[in-house]
Image (cartoon, rainbow, N blue to C red; front, side):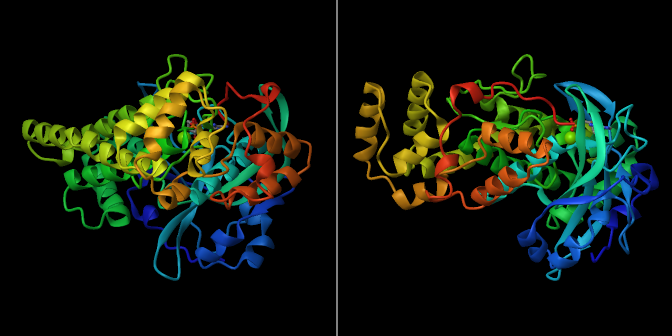
Length: 458
Ligand code: AMP
Ligand code: MG
């Protein structure tokens, strides 16, 4: 089924725990990502016929299931050991063109890293991750992908009461995180760090000779990813160091949400009390996380004082990296390479409380409804600059996974109705044009369905 060749299993055994997934009562397919399967050189029909594999009831040939160890800073505080508490790496699949991807089950039962959790996932968070990660891919954002979602025939106990259980199969360039390096550094495990560095370099930055090169590579990848989030009004919500990949792929779609009425300090997550992960803070938080990566790599960088100086100098380059990415994103969004002009528009949008996505999209057609005097003035000056409409069309989606639409799909799925999920998924796969199919999905939430708070999807 898969062509497994799992290099992670060759790392020192203290970096993971080998174990099989915990079987569930009744595996049933919710969704299979045909397009992704084909991209990976997999036969969609063979996958469709094997929901038991994606529920953890059968271990496919060649798999070496293991739970990965990692640690992390959560909301700025060091949490020590975390790890795959409800996930297992089935293995690394090598595609016909030689790409190596992790195939991971999420919700596959408890592991030694569960810390009292049940190791399971409810259908809501599984559907959210499936929809939003696939939408992000269609929107051109580096992200982990969703290959399958299955039901378990079991319920999980959550605050809201018993909910149907589900398992997501996640595909990633790797699941190595900032926190994977951190836990080894915290344990003074220099041999482990070196092994992980070699692994990460081989998978993500073959041109990197030194840990400093790897750091710079991750900085560039994260600058690109976070700038892409910012251009979509995406608020990740839980940018802890265990949720930041070395690959640069967006990971962990727990409390994430897209801004509707724009304000730079927008926060959705109920546990983000102080707005640490607000939209406007994301680039600074990325740098903060990268500084933790740099700190974890120090033991591999030779003499301490020189290493600190070199790492600091590298990190100081992040602002320029990010600015270049953001300038390109914002420039494409307004079709004029002028960051100040773009920021002026954002200021006006914040003042007017305008919907982020539809305002930018309306600008593509130079047809912004009900402009305030300030917005009309801005638009006149913008028009005089001869904006590049073709660039704008590719930078301003007509449709994004609006929070209330995702919520509708989840609520229906919890009742056993998967139709809204499938309809939304299909619409999100083609976000760049206004179509008849996406018309009902383009509008902001009606007042009663406005999502202002999200909850960590466990
Ligand atoms: P997250 O907030 O999803 O990034 O998760 C943070 C940590 O909590 C990770 O180590 C997860 O594996 C763990 N975790 C989250 N939900 C569960 C659960 N239901 N059972 C066990 N561990 C969990
Ligand atoms: Mg996580």
